[in-house]
Structures are given as structure tokens and as C-alpha cells.
Length: 293
Image (tube, rainbow, N blue to C red):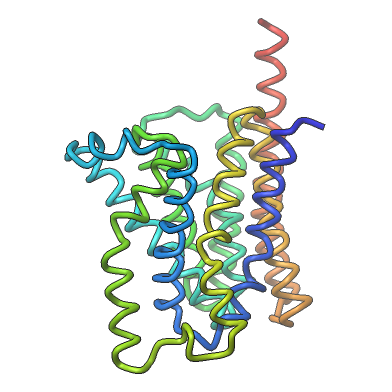
């Protein structure tokens, strides 16, 4: 099997099991978990950069205002996405958060159309319409907008949009993102420590170990994904990306016993149908182009 498929699939499987990791940390406040992710991610990524001797890019990047601004925006979107997800998982909304990552590809499509002026083929508008109906139906049965799902989808969608124009490769870009938020994150953790409300080193040793591993758990799937994405077709990457929210949904329903009614199944089903149609159309179009060449 293609190594790129294995590495990309491994990244999505790891993301799929994130609810279990964050549920284990529910005794720690979501913002403290977020700050640990930022701090330990930079520590881990810095170790990789030191080991591979990749430091020559940093000073020129920091001197370039446009580069710093791009990655500051990206870091802010990533932090908002991470915080929303951590809060949602620990508040019993794993099912709704999984919906966000099912919707995300379609949000990315719309951002490409309306911001980057990309054009959809006529057959692609059909699944986008079905997905919109699915979200509208879920809004109706919830009695409110599925704001957690939409917040996750839009923050990650805009994050992907910003990364599309970012100049650095994935390892360096993620290092700069976590570096820009390192001091505020560390400052907050020191404040929690000084005020006696910190979880790290004050709860069970297992909790402290999991918080310290936040950098590895955050960075490894991102690096696996970046490695795999370079070597497999985009349509195949599109199919693999449904592994993570599917696992999250199953974990929410079967491990943490969150409700998943027949009405929710219908709403989710409309979005799954839309994603399936869009993926199939992209696959057939790619094959057609390849055969014509």
C-alpha cells in the first residue's frame, strides 16, 4: 500500500481518538489544556528543529511583517478551534463536534468559491445544496444553530484558507504558530500556578503526564498528515478525512453514550450523502482528466 495513504490514514485515526484523550483531562479547565497544547507543542517542535538543524528560516520569517501577520492569524484561528473542540468534548458534545469536521470540507469549498474565486463544476453544487439542507434540518431539530459544529468547521476552514497563502512548510509554519502564542500561553499557566488553580503537577500523576504529552499528541498527526498529503491524490485525501469524524461520532455514541436520535441520523445522513456525492464526482473528474492526458 502507498506509504502516503498509510501516513495520512494514521493521522486521521489519531485525530479520531482525540475525544478519549480530552475526556481523560476533563478535570482540567479547557483553557489550561489549550495552553499546555501550545507550550508543549513548541517544546516538541523545537526539539525536532534542533535535531534536524533547521533554524536558518526563523530570523528572516520574524523580520517579515507579512509572514508574522499570516501566522498570527493562523495561530489565533487554530487556538479558537482547539479551545472549542476541547470544551465541546468535555461538555458532552462529541457528536456535535464530529459534525463540524464532516461539514468542514464543504465550508472549505465555499470559502474557495467566495473568497478565492474558485469555480465549482455544475455537478458539485448539488452536494453543497444537500449539505446546506442537512445543516438547516439539524438546526430545526436542535431548536438552535449547531454552533459548535459550525464554529469548528469555520475556524478550521479559515485556518486552511490562511495556510493556503502561508509561505512556510508545515513543520516550520506550525512551529511559528505555536511560538507566537507561546508567551501568552506560558503566562496563563504561570498565573494558574501562582493562584493555586493549576492542574499540572497538582492532580494525579497520570493527568500531568497527559498534559506534558500534549505537544506530541498535537504535532505528530499534523506532521504525518503533511507527509502523506504530498504523495497521494487530493480526492483520496478527501475520502480519508472522513475517518476522524466517523471515529469521533462512534466514540461519542458508543463509549460516552451521547444521544443520537433517528432525527439526528437523518440530518447527518444528508451531510454524509453530500460528501459522498462530492467525493465521487471529484474522483470521476480526476480519472477523466488523467485519461484525457
